[in-house]
Length: 103
Image (cartoon, rainbow, N blue to C red):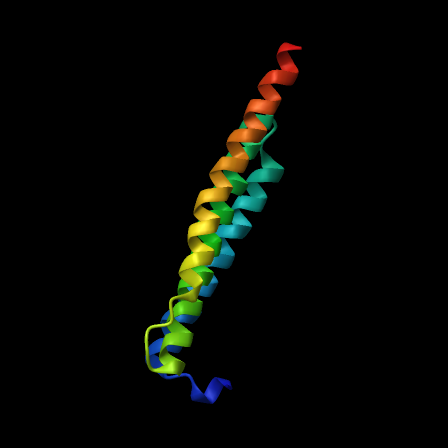
């Protein structure tokens, strides 16, 4: 597999998805630095991680489906795990912070 073997119709949207995913993740990281309160700091990285990784995984599905000339959906499992675990981790961190403030 090399760059010459990826069709243009798959390479352009995949490149756009990769750039969007990187920008969304960067915005989430900047939000982590910018916000002062703990609860506000949790929101930006969670959204950045979920949406940024989702864009990267969609680009991967597109490129590998074009190369294999069939639908390749292995990345869907990664996406499902990410969409399930990221909000749960955030919720657990918020509950732990609430318990520590009460004690």
